[in-house]
Image 1 (spheres, helix red, strand yellow):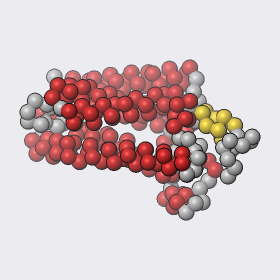
Image 2: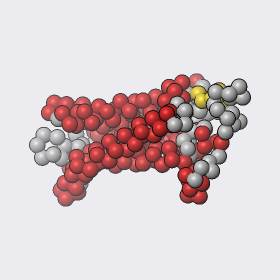
Image 3: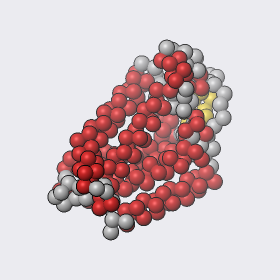
Image 4: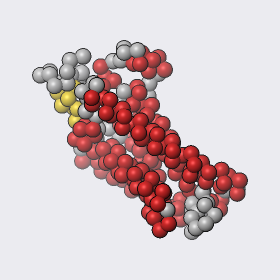
Length: 228
């Protein structure tokens, strides 16, 4: 495949603005969660707030995975096992360079799944000192203990490992394949030689995203209020 810098390359809107905002907001929230969770004390108030923010962001991304821009939709990066195997053997297709390639897709789904599990266990956790998730009283003590153990001893380590793997992959693509994966997540555009349809990213789609996000935030606020 020719270099992306060749004259035949064209700029294509791959990542719509809502997807980009989701990505960077989630990144900042996860960093904040790791810091506040390790510091503890008064910082736990922010730990819970950031956890609710992540909950909202995840719900938004689940919905946006069905109604968002073309390359943000799950349908664009759900690959058959045969496709993943072919990619690993170096027989990837040109369109795999547009959105999430078969390996990147696996990383995305893993992060979303483990983040949701971390949020779920946080909602029902209880450190038996001063901090309880808003839904802990609706779960048996045995399940609260299991959720608390997973949240503190397993889940955070898994997420750190996945985040580091994500960073390593970005560095690998930048240094070995000369492909900058960060710039498109900032600008939304990629220089591509393959002819593909762009993601919709206009005032209408952004308004829809804002409404979806507001509804997700309202749902999270309602869930949290159940513990009041």
